[in-house]
Length: 229
Image 1 (cartoon, helix red, strand yellow):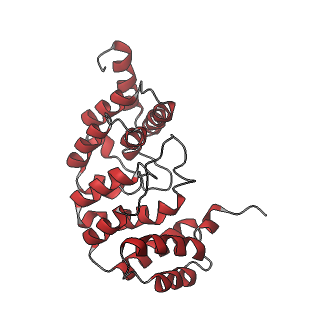
Image 2 (cartoon, helix red, strand yellow):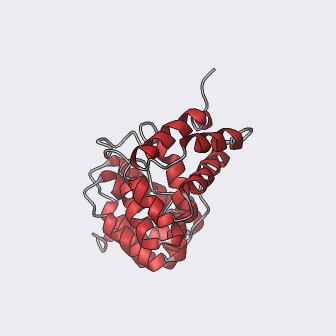
């Protein structure tokens, strides 16, 4: 029987993650963490399991979110060397991303820096959404800067962040409220050297076309006329 993706987030992965944290924070109670995970995931589906992991991280690490991120930064490991691997090599980072998604608004600056590093190993597309809703102008300004980053995963994140219908995430229309910046972001990425990034731009336009046809056609028309370079 083929193993379902949700089943990778079990006691074994809990121990893997716990051991990594304990390697840089020896006081981290690995056995307590593993026990919380094993008890909590029974009968749970994929996203519910992520919540169990995230809750256990907060319970065992303590309530100081910003301090916890400093610890978690130390276990991220090397950056991905290819466009693929975020959900294979970096699968164990998913609960950390969920932890940031849930708690990130507690410290905007620390969260943004962490997400930038996380996405080079996994993805930050879910973790950044609450920050985008909380501080749309400031976050979009940062995302615009990311759209010119040398790292392909950061550039992909720049496109994915403000998608209206990002899979497994709540709908966001920040792109409409900050449309001028949004256009600049997509324009910076539309001819990216990576097809991986170009596909994300296409996903944005597909979402936008279904939600607001006029806005989507405005972008395409301006590209065709050469007004956006």
